[in-house]
Structure formats: structure tokens, C-alpha cells
Image (cartoon, rainbow, N blue to C red; front, side):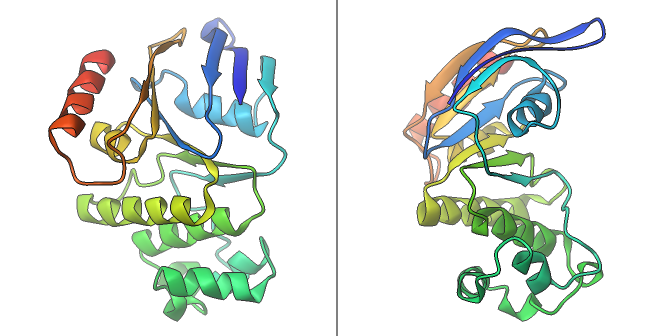
Length: 220
């Protein structure tokens, strides 16, 4: 997917002839300083805000996982999934695979923060989507729960091989998850560097630390 856009809010220029290539069927990570426009970029891709320029090809079906869960509080877990995909076998497969079958009849108020995000991830991936957008989905969770959900995201990727764009401020998470890591500058935002990361989905080693150090330097 080729992105070439400009976007402003009044006199504030967020993107000016901003260019970025998103690699299909890979986990693409966006990282950069706060306020540089990472969430705005996802909103442009999703068609939630206006912009000038082009996104080619324009994804028709998008799964979106937000910082906070967007589950319907008046529906059970199962019903929240069923309104996205009414295939009972698929729903049960994902609930079983990620050990949350016992939550199927629970309502939003009966779920912990981690459980809500697990169901939100499942909901995004059972949709027949061309692209999954993830806007800091683990931001409000503790360290160990975040690690667990990162592993869940890896498994979801391996099951589906969907194209993903993950926004994060967490350098360690970017190294662990991002097959392609795009480092953004401050506004007006440009791509400082796109890194092909061969250290994904396994424990840190010397090569991982090298990528980690490079990202820290670029972000500073």
C-alpha cells in the first residue's frame, strides 16, 4: 500500500507530501514522538478524517483496535463477536485458541482490562478485513499483561497473515513485533527511516539490542 498524503488542522501541518509504503501481509510498526500524527495517519487510512492525496490501493474492509476497547456493553462477548462474523465455528475456534471460551456469556462490566483487549483483538481478526489497524492497543495495561497480549498478536498474525499497522511508543514492543518499523519525525511529519527488522517474534539478543539502540537514536 502506497501512502502519499497531506493533512492539516487549521494552521497546524501534520503531513505535507508524506510518503510511506506499507508492506502487505506483514506487521508494520509506526513509532515516533508524541503528537507526530501516528493516530491521525491511521484515521486517514481508515477514512475517518479527510486528507489530500492518495492511498493506493484503498483498503475496503478494515479491522480497527483502539487504545480503549470498543465492545458493546449491552452485548455478551459472544454477541460482540457474532455481529462481526456470524460463523459460529470461527467464533468458537478463536475463543478456544486464546483460552477465553469461559467468557462467552459475560458482559463488558464482567471483564478485566486484559480480557476486553483480548476480545477486541479477536473481533478485529475474525472480520473479513484486508487490513488491521492497531492504535496503541496495550497502552493502559501492565507490563506482563502487555507481553502476553503481544504474544497473542503474534499468534493472530501467524494464523491469518493479515496486513497490520501497529502504532506504539514502546521501543521494545516495536522491535519484538515490527517486521517493518517506520520511524516518524515530529510535525510536519516525515519518515526518518524504515527498518527491515529480522529480529521479530523471539527473545531479545545482541541483534535485537542493536535495532533497539538504533530506534532510540532515531527517535531522540
